[in-house]
Amino acid sequence: MSSSTTTSSSSFAKQNLPHPLCFCEIEAQLRFSNTQNNSGRPFLSCPKYNKEGLPYCKYFKWVEGHEYKMADRPETDAEFCSKEKELKMLVNEIEKLIIDLR
Image (cartoon, rainbow, N blue to C red; front, side, top):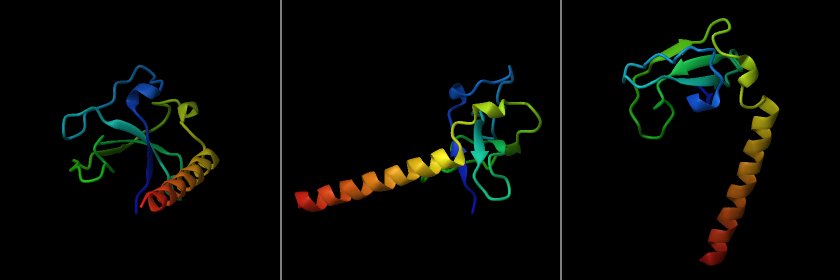
């Protein structure tokens, strides 16, 4: 099972390197792996990857060396876990509200 953190390319400071095009001929998207073996490792992939129901071209390329600044990583694992917990609480609240409305 693969997992990744997605960010828009505009939110990252690039070191004057344009993102290559994926096989769909769309600018590849910079993401960060959340897998145990490659935690935090940057890679480029099709922007449609991991979007529910959208076909994607399976373009994948690890970002090597200092092509992109690692300091620009959007969140640490702890921040991600905290946000995930907060979202779960919000979902629970919404589900309770739905039940109350019925």
